[in-house]
Structures are given as C-alpha cells and as structure tokens.
Length: 432
Image (cartoon, rainbow, N blue to C red; front, side, top):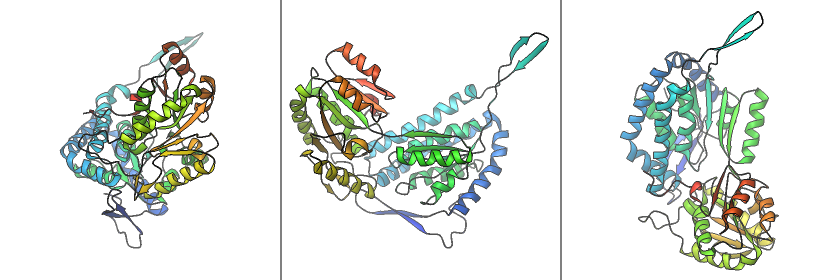
C-alpha cells in the first residue's frame, strides 16, 4: 500500500510544475515526521518476509519490475522530461541508466550474496571455522537529487532490495512525480510492500532519523548534516556528494579542442550534474587565446541532441537565484562577464566569467548550472593546488605532452580524471 494513498486529511500539498513552461504537472501530499515513522514501521514489518524469500525469490520480483519499467518506458520518460526540464533524449538516457542498474544487480545478485565460503584456521589445540555472511539493514533510506531523480533512486534502491532490505525513498520536492510512478509500479506488479516513498521538506530529516541505513546524493553542505544526523543515531550512511569538478589547460594544449571539450563538459544539460565542469584553470601564456575560443564555443553551444535545439531549463526555480547570486558575487569581486549571465524564467544563458578568482563563491560553492569561471594560473603546480582545494568528483587535463598529462592526472584527487577528454563526465549522447 502506497504511503500517499491513506487518509491525507490535514496534509499540506506539493504542486509540481514543469520548469520549461510552468505547467502544473501534479500534486501530492507531504508527510509529517510521524507519518514517515509509520511508513518506516510498515516497511520494517514487511522486510522480514522479503529477506526470508532469499536471493532467488527477490531476483524474480526484480525481473518482473524490470519488465514493468520496460513496458512503461514512454510514460516514465515523458514524465521525467516534463518535471526535470530535460529533453526527451536526455530523459531516455537517464531511464536506460536506471534500467541498466536493475539488470546488473538482478544478474549478479546471487554471486554477490551467495552462500559464504567456510574458512579453516588452525591454532595449537584450537580448531576454528570462520565464515563471512551478509545481514541486510531492515530499512534503507534513499535521498536522491533533483538532477537525476530516477537513475539515482534506482542506483541506490535496487541493490538494497536485492540484498533483502526494504527501501524508503524521499525524492526532491521539485521532482517527486517520476519516483512516485516507479514506486506505484512496484505495487502494481503485486510485489511485497518493501518499497515506498515519502515527500515534503519535513520528510527528509525524518527519514534519516528513522531508517537503518542512509543513501544520500547531493551537495556537500547537506551531506554534512546527513552524516552528523546519522552518526548521532549510530546508523551507517553512504554519501555521494557533488563539488567543484575542474579542468586544467596547460599552455601547450590545443585551445580549440580544449574549449570545445570544456564547453560540452560544463554546459551539457545546463551543467546540472555533479560531474559538470565548474572551474577552469588556464596557464597564463595561453589564457587569452583559450578564453576567446571558449566564448566562441559557448556562443555556438546547442543541445547535444540534434532534434532539440533549446537550452535545457534549470530544474529548480529556486536554484536560478543561486546562479544569479554567484555571478553577482563574481562581478563584484572583479570578474569579467564575457557572455551570458542572465535568465529567462528558468532558462539560464550559458555563461563565461573571465578573470575569476578563488575568493569568489562561484569557485568555492557548487554551481550546478551553465557557468564556466576561468582562472589564470602561473603554472601546472598552481592549477593542481587550486583544483584539489576543494576536490571535485571529476577533473580533466588538457595538454599536448602525454607525460605531463599523466603526471598531473596522478596528483589530482578527483575520483575520475580524463586527459584531453571529458567523456568520463557524461553518458554519451548515443547511449542506448
């Protein structure tokens, strides 16, 4: 039984609007902390039977769920595109990434969770037999971001379900409808009631205060709050945090190739990915030529999808003000606006800020928007120091010297580092 279907008398409601044109897409009731607790208790009761079903039984239900997802692909993709503002092609890529996660875990789940292998260890006069086994947490809380609400939900919920846990999802207030549709689909196939969702601003903290394990994807600032709140209860949490992904352009780099790649890496889907390039460090001798080429690339930049020529809107209306604030702060501190910098509704112009300085908030706070601040640096060492403080999830190095590229890449602290390429930041446009 879905948590939004019971008596909702006295609830406040969320109205979800399309960022592209402001259409009302749907409404749903919010959940108080008490209601979140009740949903979690129901999931905890159902989890006992779900765990006892064993891996084979859970794989069967995940296979049926995968079939439901495939059968409702068009509806889910259109809904995701409407509530996020993504193109249909971008929403389809996100949908297929989520389905890939279902396929991966239902295919490999039995291997991951197979019977433990006994290990014998003999000591003088003592014979010990050791074995490793896995015990699922009863209820796992999943808090996905508004940038990839569907894929992130499936990335975290499916392995938890496969392991034998129940899952409680709290989607973002601006993009809850696709997640609600997916949870509804789980119920429609008659699966055990071990997947549910809650909504509303009070629901997020209540989930962290109620579940037995937390998966959070979002900003470092909120991640710190989640970590402290989980630690206070001594429950484990996993944080997938954004940050300030960087590009380093050395003086021997091809300025045209670097500018084209960095424009793609920073502006695709309007920069709304934790892996989007948000800082560009350029060696002094090649700085002016690179900025000129980058401005030309940004001016010509269009959507990656040939049938979609618009710039993707910012999914969250409130986030547009955050982007304006970062630009105002940068200009007040000496940056030069080379192109863009304004918004029409929730469509924010692709923007280049030259003469950026590390003291500006656009260099220190996550942007999640189509803004490329370019910092002049004396040499590679200076770029490395800045790129690693704070460290973002991704980085790229642009140079004609392979040895120098490998050396710099080896000293960057980012999880993913590309040389003369930003493909690691993005699902390829032709992904199918």
